[in-house]
Structure formats: C-alpha cells, structure tokens
Length: 416
Image: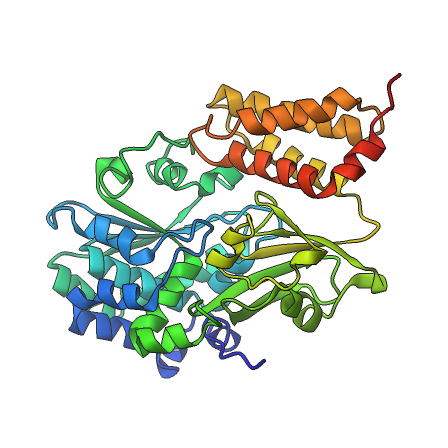
C-alpha cells in the first residue's frame, strides 16, 4: 500500500525554516482561506475533518460554534500540544520537524472564527519542540502573510507560545484554559463550553496540533483530495504512534482506515522475538483493548466505535503473548492515579482504589472479592469527574477484565 504523506513529508526538510516551508507550497492553504474566509467551514465539513486529539468531534462544528460569537470580542485559538499520555508522540514530532503547517492551520482557524489571539500550547518537558516553535513564531511575526490575516481581522494577531504545566491533566481543554490564564490546570465544569466562555471569559477554540496541521493542507488542496486519501468511508490520513512489542516502533502516517494488521505486521515489522500477538491498547492506555480477533479492524473513528473501542490519539501500544495484561493495566492506572489533580474526590479516591486492587492482584495477594470490587468501581466511577481521567482509567480496567478475565482469575488467591 502506497501512502501519500501529508504531514510527515515536509517534516523531513522544513524544520523551523519558514522560507523552506513556503518553497514547498506552504502558505497556499492560508492564502486560499484569505481569498474566501466564509468558505472555510464548508470546506472542512466536506472534507470530514474530525478532531485528532482523541474525541473525533467534527472540526467544522467546533469552529462554527466559535464563529457564531460576536466578532468584536477578544477571541482565542489554542493549539493543544500538551501530549503527556503514555504511547502518544505524534504532536511532538510535528512541532519539532514541521511547526509551520501547524501555525498555518491555526491562522486558518483564526480567520474562520474571527480570532485575534493564537497560542501554541506546548509541553515544557519537550524542550526541543518548545525551542523550535518559538523560532518558527518569530519568523511568522515578520511575515507579510500574517500581516494580511491581521488586515482582514482589522486588528493585530497575537501569536505566541504558552508552555503548559507539563501535567497529564493539563491537556484537557478546560484545563488548557486555566493554564493559559496563569492558574493551576484544574478542569472546569461544562457548560459553559469554551466557545462561549474560555480564556478570561472570552470565546475560545481548542484544537489538537494534528487537527490544525490537516486544516492547512485541506484548504490548499481541497476537500475531495483529502477525502480520497482515506480507505473505505474514512477520510484523510492519520498519524499512528506505534509502540510496545513490535520490531519497528515509530510514527507512521497512513490512510485513515488502515487495518490494524497492516500497521503492526507490515509497517511495524511484526512482533518482537517472533512472539504471538496478544492485544493492543488502542488510542493510548485510556481506551479499550483489542485482541487477536480484531486484527482485521480498520483504524478509523466509526469502525473502532462499532467494535466498542476508540481511535483516540492514534496511539497503538502492542502487547505480545508472555506479557502480563494485569501488570500493564496496573502500570497505566498508576499513571492515572498520579495524574489526578485531586479536584474531584471520586476521581482521586477511585483511581487510588483501582491502583491498589490491581497491585494486589498483580503481586499474587488479591482475593476473588477484589475482582468484584474492580468491576463495581468501573461501573460506579465513570462520569463522576469534571474531565475524562477517571472514565479512561475505568474503561481500560473494565476492557481488560472482559478480554482477559482468565489472567486476573489465575492470579487471585483461591478461598475455601
């Protein structure tokens, strides 16, 4: 299968060099948007671009909610590059190797929504990404194309880098708002949604780095071109972060809808040590597991949802036979327990209890009642927090119990 690279192809040569980006055709998407700002949303709708940071929400609908707010208000576009979940490393690659496509996409979003503040929100632990993005933004500040955007908006464009807290919870969209305002990244209750009340109470659009990068290419080449890149009913390409027990882990840009088997065995080179495939955490560790019977599944939003799973960020963490599912799940739930901000007691206490029970079972000291307690918590806890952290922790535990209950049962102490 030959793939037309959209996001990674320019990353090989461009870096933070704006002239090199323009020489490759960069800026054409923004110029197209400037020539017809009212057509941006319809183009994205026709392309069927969806949020690529995990939720998969239609991008044009999110932008339309922001655009509906009065144009004279201060408006913010926040490019979310916090990326702190295990197994996810696509946004860092884009920011380090080709930040200009992200900035261009963000400026297109500003045009579509009449925004005058554009902030790239980057994890400070990614030192190289922060440095490259700062350099890239300095070049845009002296660029005539940015001046054209400001002229269209009839006010200056505030383009800047904002470092995140570096915490996992800092990537949740309302926590992004809190960080940009200078506070601790506590998630906030919704509604109101960011499009109505975000940074300093003003309309705010928050999109993932990859989503915005795609927008630049869609406006450049058109919706039909983008749709044709996908397989089946899926549209465009997707960055898949492949890690775990594979021979060639790495970042792969493939057509949306590429089968899981193709990603792992053709691009990833198959399993380490010639072991058998056991399972994969799809979309990162906050989603469900898929087993050997699911290797045929196309990796796109709707097909994975029909299988009871989720594409998430596109992270695929592969597990081979001989690796303990209980231990891997325990490690990820430990991560969630450490990442809980403590604002919602059910989340803080719930993730701690899940972690404690999993560690008991993993170390051979768990009892049959611990399995029942795990299941009960997984049904009780979702929806009890202001963000999705507790939901993700419960999802991965419940999914692993459903798929690999025999492993859990084999590790508990028999009673009676």
